[in-house]
Image (cartoon, rainbow, N blue to C red):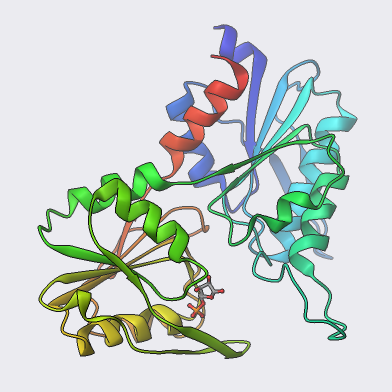
Length: 305
Ligand SMILES: O=P(O)(O)OC[C@H]1O[C@@H](O)[C@H](O)[C@@H]1O
């Protein structure tokens, strides 16, 4: 088959489950990288097939340092073995919330510097999914094709599938309210935003929510859940303001530390999110949908299939 001959789809170790789903949707085989670990922790990588003259697709979240480095290694490897083009899909971009710094803070804007490392490895095309901020797209000088994929269509399908009649979308902060307003216009439902303040690395405080939620189901939407602090507080403010029940939804389910336990103890009805963050699967707490159909569609149109 033409497509199978022209494309090679590989992934970082952690993003292989998502990459398999993308490959199935795209109608190509998933090529598992050959990996061997040395006693000192160094990792040997080899492509399982010839990539020379073929379009290499690399799927890899950069959620931890090892995966970030693996993405860089796979891009460099594709160049070394003469892939016709190197195309990267980053389902979750690590450090994406550190994209701006306060004047004189001496902070390193790692959202920018780490994204720049990816661009400097010389891929031809990089696609990101539901970025915290599009500022990172400007971390290169223009010669690389970038695409920011919004998952609006999947979110709309998921909310419609819940079968709730009267609901309000709620953003935990004003920064995300533009996206929530866009989703609300697609779903033709009301929307509102809470007022969130981040006063320390993992600590936020969320103010009151408008009475538009009274007597309705509130669906709190955000780009990511890390500790769960922002979204759980927003859910509680919705109930304080008279919401009948609360669902929460975020693309990237990081779920760090004690967050699962906090959700289990919260009044939240369901935690909904996608499979961009490695290791996330549906269970008693989580309702996970896949971004694979959307990623496959984007890749098909990128390669003109
Ligand atoms: O409150 P937790 O879950 O720790 O962190 C997630 C929040 O931190 C923000 O920057 C994200 O956009 C999201 O609103």
